[in-house]
Amino acid sequence: MTDGHDQNAAATSGGLTRRDGSAAGARLRVAIVGGGFMAEVHSRAARAARAELVGIASSSPERSAAAAERLGIERAYGSLDELLADDSIDVVHVTTPNAVHAEQASAVLAAGKDVVCEKPLATTVSDAEALVAAAEGRTATVPFVYRFHPLVREARSRFASGQAGRVLTINASYLQDWLLAAGDDNWRVDAQQGGRSRAFADIGSHLVDLVEFVSGDRVSRVSATKRTVFAERASHAGITTEDAVAVVMETRSGALGTLMVSQVAPGRKNRLFLEIAGSEESVAFDQEQPETLWVGRRKGSQVIPRDADQLSEDAARLCVVPSGHPQGYQDAFNAFIADSYAAVAGENPDGLPRFSDGLRAVRITDAVIDSAESGTWIEMGTNE
Ligand code: SOE
Image (cartoon, rainbow, N blue to C red; front, side, top):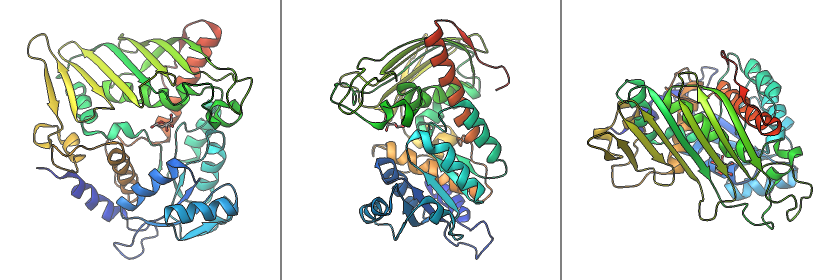
């Protein structure tokens, strides 16, 4: 069995050599901004990649101390400025609410450090464009981590090799239920903290990234409609961000697609579903069942298991346990961080989502909301 993780680890163990060229094998020193659930996910992935998780900064010295205690991190910084003043830090993970991503990721880059910034990269296209420009020459990645499920890479390889034929139709959805009740609330519902789009910016960004990543095609135009089911929630009123959004789309190659994104779908927790029909084969991937990939043919459709010996090289590389031991979300996140750190060391791992991919998702999100608000088709730029 190809244990891609050791190869990956080999890349990252080389990757853990500090950017300043200090002793070979020196561990990469990383820090986290933010103290919530995603900070915990990032901390697990940083440790799995053998980085030295040096410190954390949250919204106040007290919250920094509480997060450091909860996550077993050595140092609590009083502020982001204090963290950025620590020259020993190589990489900063930004895991804070959307509205401060641009300001904080910019500050990290201005301090000469590499950055992993949570999606959505920014709440406006102009902020995302500025971040891409500021990231020139640096390693700057965005956790579109569903790219790192091995069977997503297998699906992608079938379109990249031509085996699946040309893209004809796309049927994709991302459904959750954590905001189903009026009593459910979160900073994301507030446009001031999350941006003008909520459901699409939050999870539709993953969906469109995966559509373009697997198909190798690009969205060319969108027509959308959206709903805010609850204008009042437990601690927010006058809510304008969407609970659900439906999109009809076309691609540059002429394919047709439909997208449904909802955070009010009972029983669906993180049900990202992607079915792409090629002229030779269809592929269907369900993020809640990531150990199999359906491959459809006129004759001989099959369900492919996550078995490294049967997969493309890029898919096999991401298999870290033998088939039959299920891999999941944190494994995908760990692989993303391992590849991000390998990029810090000068490697160029295939399929690593960088700030340019984050900008792409922000552009599509903006077009979707513009379309829903105007009731018209919105064209995507042809060179973006
Ligand atoms: C909430 O919708 C959320 O945590 C997203 O912000 C993540 O990006 C997604 O992976 C899971 O759900």
